[in-house]
Amino acid sequence: MKIFYISKYATPSKDGNSDRKYILSKYMNRHTDKVTLIYSRSNGKKYKSSLKLFQKEIFEGLECIRINGITLKQMGVNFRRMFSWIQFEINLFLFFIFLPKSKRPDVVIASSFSLFTFYTVAILKKIYKFKMLVEVRDICPQTEVEFGRIKESGIIYKIFKYIELFGYKHADKIFSTIPKFDDYLKTQGFLDKDFLCIPQGFDREYIPSLKTKGAPNENFTVMYAGTIGEVNLVEEICIAAEQLQNTNIRFIVYGDGPLKENLRQKYSHLQNLDFKGIVSKREIAEILMEADLLVNMWADKSVYQYGVSPNKWIDYMLAAVPVLVTYNGHQSIINEAGCGWFIKANDPKLMAEKILEISKMSPTELRQIGLNGRKYAIENLDYEILANKLLNFIYE
Image (cartoon, rainbow, N blue to C red; front, side, top):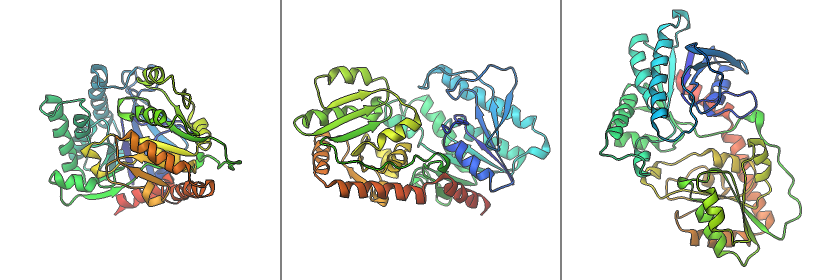
């Protein structure tokens, strides 16, 4: 069985910095006849310019096809990025036209984002008679509406919504990182679509080795690692730090983003709050293990009623450190693993109170809670395990 996994923003790499689509493809390729990952030159990475329609490379035995396109310097919603979506779909269609009959796929996975790939693959399905799976990692365009990026009355929303539903209609099966996405499908009129949740995971070939915890430090370290932007709500950490100035609790923020300098200056008076820079994926895995508590903040949005599955939780769990999440949506993974706590979103005072409460727990108890997360991740979120589940879902 030949499987094409198409995702505009997939990022193959030989150094362990690849994304979900590449890793799933890599492991599926080891257990089936042939998997090909197809992605775009316009994925935010730097590649040499070329006049060829596509470039073929082999990564870890996996055939990867990079469709030509313009380079992107920024990833927000802008004209250049939207043009790259259309360009990718046109070139993808041409790629199929020139594809020899012997190399045509039996199954094609169309992964969002961009939603336009749903439409292109659905049209190609009618021509080439393959089976189509849709992968959903974000409920678009509803998420864009709730965060104020587009208006529900606008033409962009209407185009995206049409393509979204067109993709679901023509998909033979659907899988998603979102645990309750099947409930969302029912609200859209799709009552009988075969669905499987494939959460975010990790590549076992690059799992960080566990550090031995030394003697308890006199300070209790709370850490966040990730983007510092509007949707990440990092200011809630700053407010919590302000409320806990007269304690032994220290806050460290790793990462970068448009709000970093503003927050650094606004809260420069806090002695218990430090902003650090960006570090590599391997370095951050080591750094996370030095924390006593890892935090993640979410906005109070109705779209989260169907759940989330962020990469951040996987990184946190593999660090074997307890996790505190401010979140009002469907709870999964953290509670299932017994490795942390969910509390109400958008309430920095409550967050500070919970952090103070956790800081008074014994180091032994906290260590066990953290180890629960690592154990759960290794047993359930290994991408080789998830790839086998996806393959079984395809073969059924």
